[in-house]
Length: 289
Image (cartoon, rainbow, N blue to C red):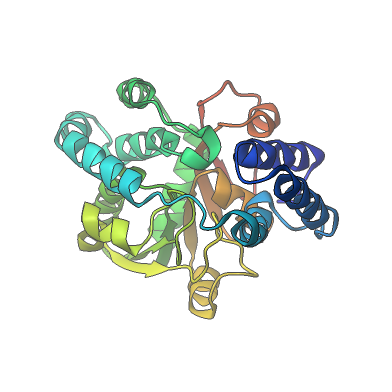
């Protein structure tokens, strides 16, 4: 997805907020000039998550290590694991457990400290409760089922910690529905905000549901020009890709692969693009989005 004026403004605003109480005034001034330079020198195809990774390199020069989300990730992984039995019960009671798993996994996309700054547990509980009666875009969902019925290989690209518990349930149902389908789950290759990595996959048992691989980079998304060679090959060879979260949409949209995106609209640009209220869910296909 090409970087737009709204994303540029948001990048500047978020970085100013980030360092408002950090270090000396001259360091803050110099840092923001560097941020502006990175944005000004970016290519049209550079997405916001890619630029944030470049900005983080400058941040470390002026202010030291970026925020460590390790404890937050463990906390929300455990929180979602505690809710897993109840979510399974709702899935089992419904007519289409796979559909239900997908709407729960989409609702859990709310666990995003990079976008929200703070994740309210009460809001998360409310979104999960509403998910039980929510639905996917019927046409796109049926397209995905049709594609999966003919597919040999699928890649499921995760987004956030905690959310991966629901991703695990979705993958389990995919394997039940399509037993001959080769499914690989892709996580981030390095720490990126509170995005899921191999460690989160192990903590939540996602590795027991499917083969796990990482994308080989620390961008909060999956940009094909930045991921590792093995990850890119897997993505390009996949018949179907499911990609979770705004960051994956920003970094993958327009790449030409057969991708189904599932996410909540959490920022102004996404809400405006899709005509949705804040935290409303989307399920769109690359070829029709």
